[in-house]
Length: 527
Image (tube, rainbow, N blue to C red; front, side):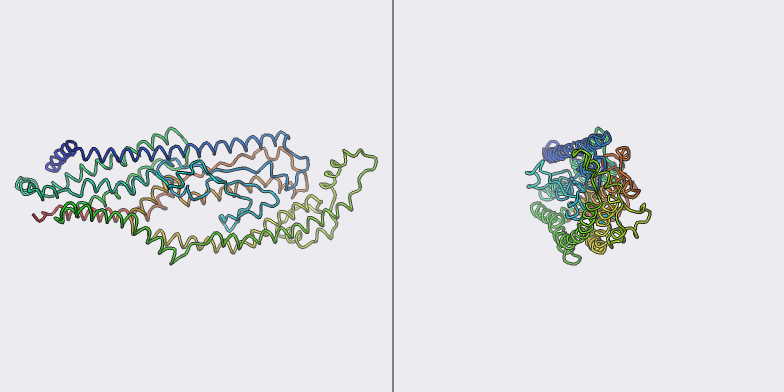
């Protein structure tokens, strides 16, 4: 160990005097700094959009509570100006680490529960539910960066960090071997293991400090200053450990290639080919293989299969609603002595208070809904019957789409499961998965976002449904507890660890392979 420390001190002086180590570290620091600057700017824009949307919805709800944006007898159509909102997905606490899939997944969704919103593209959520009335909002804050692709810290670590390691390990002992200095060094009481270990310790530590330690420290400072996000702080250590395992593999590979006794130019060529295969070719092959063996579900086909369902349900609702309004027009008798401007108010009161004829209440569309949802006050008023028909449209659409949603979700899960297993072939894919999960930019977090949005939208509509069920008009006080959407489901350490157990195990296996190659490189080389 003493000899290894001595070699490490001398190696550090030589690297500093030669300038190569400083140049590699500086370039890596510059790349990491640019990546952090770019992602931090986008994270700030996203948080600004979240706060702006939340404030706008809060203002709308406050005006509704005051009665400024409220009709006296609202129906389902009057939910629109009150509960409609835009929900941008907030970035994670460590969102500066990786853009992940944020450039391909919709980062803002608009919820508009109007009459024709059921014809919007469906979003499958938990328990076979289908979320309609949800339209993606196009984000064009940085169109050029989206055109060129993401440049974030994950890109620097996954792609540039191995190249920096190769720049310092392709001639670990090659220069000494070609110049004859290696024989002189071996004549001293310094073994090959001490030489290789000391050089790897210094060169690997220099690259890890510049490309990992400093950027992660900056990311932690940025996250601490923001005080927003839901990922545990310990996730940063998990990301650091995964990166060290990744670097261990590349260090061992570089040391082993150098120990084969080839020319330093050949070493550089072999390591470049290995980098190309591991970071580019193998991921491309795994993607193609996953799509061939377990093809992902087609979102276009899913939309085409589910699009007729709300149209059929809306057709039934439209027939029922038209029959109700025709019957109301015959039953309503305005007061001839009343002033004309008072008739709309009287008509609205009659719509809420008059009961529908028994034959309308026995219509199949309404009767089936009441059988599924007992507890509605009887006999139904016209307003209740119209609301029941509208709720029947939503429930019937979900009921008809349940089988399609379950098939879509099952197909997607099979594809993702195979893709995760095939990712074990490349440490680059494994590290990317870990950094995306820690940064909160993976597909799993987006799915949780849509599911929470689904639950929140249903909670906002619940007062309207409850009022119709009881046969009374809703009042502004009934939405007193309504709040803007806030995506704040905490990510537990156990949950994050379970999700990343497989990629971490794969990275550990590659690190052990790198350690074995390092041990092999410590054997006396052929002079």
